Image (cartoon, rainbow, N blue to C red; front, side):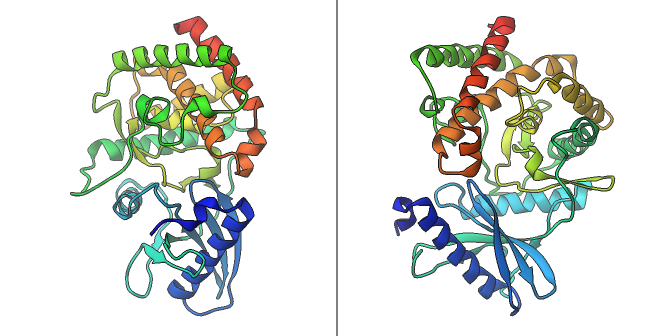
Length: 334
């Protein structure tokens, strides 16, 4: 059945998605007087659910992004990280039928949406005004995830996206093409085309050996990290998939790639990472390529998600800043 929400206004869409979330709560959670508050709307829409003496998260999946099998694969890796690598990820809450993924239909969304319930984890996001103290711990937890990934054998049928140049900024992008970004001119398009060509050349030389490329979180930005005392907790594995391990560092700088303290943040992350896993000088030298690859992917994301609060907050100025970063990068590597 076609997704009739595709032609709705943003307000109409959010109203219908909240209806799906409320029905999911009624179908899955024990009876109680619950309140729902939307906390994020991007690829999916997530809500904080409070009531019955507890707090949980419900995620309403968008259509056409991940299959049910891919969602189940995400949940499988999250559980393995928690049980085998000591990385604190949210536990998934099963329904009365024992299922972890619930396909919820309403009169206004007859095609239904997949929904998943997660435990609510305490913690606060890293302080964006003073990020340096949190980046060594971020490097450490990322290294623990990568160590697990390098030694883990996914079960049969495991299915997740691959994040490569082609699927990030090439001709098969998961998040739309960067040429549909905001505030682009012929000169800027030519600049970004040179950037893509240079990154492509360097990444082909860098390669995809098992030490360099594997299963990663793929969205280690500040909003997906929770600091609780000495523990760095990781949430939102919706984008996890196969990519270069350094992609996780690049995503940690999402939307802040042009901060003046990026060299210090990079050094702090590397210090923490190397406490757990080795990282060669050749890998360290290629970090700028991954940062620019992510940055251009975000230009595409903003262009294809204009309705979201984050895209509107970044706006056309994000493209302008990306041009400055691209010029600096090409001055060194182009």
